[in-house]
Image (tube, rainbow, N blue to C red):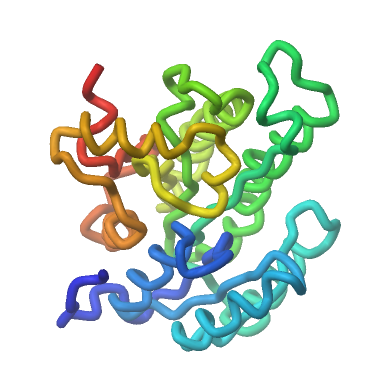
Length: 260
């Protein structure tokens, strides 16, 4: 659960959260934390099928902007940023919490990945963040923070993570380059790397329960991370107190990544 917050440390800030699918989503944990700290939020839902799950959460956040966004559909991403520009005129942070790989691509060996599956994986999981950074830049007039979600499988070979590890490695590299390019404008960029989480997206990874058990037994804290743990740490990085932190991968995993 989000701890009780007495100080609205992000009051006056406005941000876009992309990737809420349900109340188990990492993006939902982030959105709740940002809102608890006083930020105003715009949120998106993938399609009409997802809308009934996301709308009540958006209402709980008192989000004034709620729009459909499938980054694979031409024009939808631009429409979201056009709406933000029209209604708010500026933006302080963006949370990109989306990734996708076709089932047959994700579950196969990297060496066997089909071209179309590879392109689809990279387009949704990496290119979409680059595009969001491009669209955010002119709206972050006073600086801002860009967040994306990654995983340890970008750095080490994790069984069954397969081509998604390749996509996340590209995403983390993009974070470093974008941080260098936008840093002079006061725009910070972070890759957030949570430990294993029981989300709907993770359910597509074979033997994921074994990964969860191993993480809990191995992490120095002997505990699994929650979406609220991820949310509060992410929200902190949007505060001006974190203005000199940028361009890195921030692990929120109870120290799991440091243990062999």
